[in-house]
Length: 392
Image (tube, rainbow, N blue to C red; front, side, top):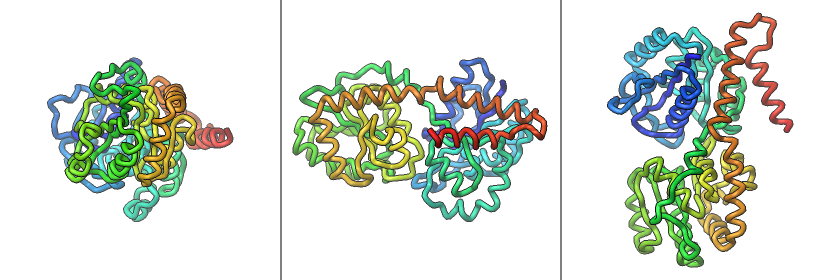
């Protein structure tokens, strides 16, 4: 099968959607499929041959963050040319509701198109305004994928229709097999707690995490807090300097270092305050055998199975975070149990499993495109699958 995949966000600024597309494309190619990815990107020096760029992008505030999008006449021309020359069996566009090249590709496509929706929003003024114009375009989608129940809810509330839930994939083997760096390894005397995320993006929760540190150290003096992520956080660095080597800012880390960091830690804390549709890093930590403590966002509750395979605390409440963290660090047996349960649960998000599900949907879409009008539509099949999942 020859598949064209469209990424709406700049490849120059790593993010969850870009990592999802990269890893999925690699898994498809490993299975013998031909794949081409279209994306905005300014830096083309290190792009593999299977990635085509439409050029640079512009920064646009979106969902509590900043997205780099491309919606220019030049991008539109290059998108059409890529589709015309691609000879694809099927097109897979990510975030087609976002004003970038996924939307442009959907508008230009004359072959079956699958759309994946990642975002989770409670309310979006821009979507409410644009939905009347956008919804007819989304009708071109032969099938819709939502990466979580929250992403599905957002899609249904803003645009109607439905989507089959197929979660984000994670290279679980990579995290399972990670090598621990001695300088980051937890010991009984010095348990390690990890934060990972953009330091200057408030919804990632660094303020919530930082405010819990003093309380934890008062009860667990040997605890170490390792904070990894890009962005400036001068205010928090200054506030936490007084704790000496109990708090360390690592800056941005590579994939290998992230895996090593999680593998050697006792607890990964996910203190995000909103705007999360899934929680890839939660699964990465679980795969590495690290216990997870996360804010009780709906998306995180789903990944942690309502607290069965990871612990939860009240979103935005630093004192509750501190209480839960102290409890876990004092109870080595519960900590080990959570880590084991999380590691076992992470297998359902492995790329082997996720890719099987996506390919099954691809086959349904292609068969439907060739079917007689009396045959069930892809949307009918999606509705049936979701109803079955809701009944379980």
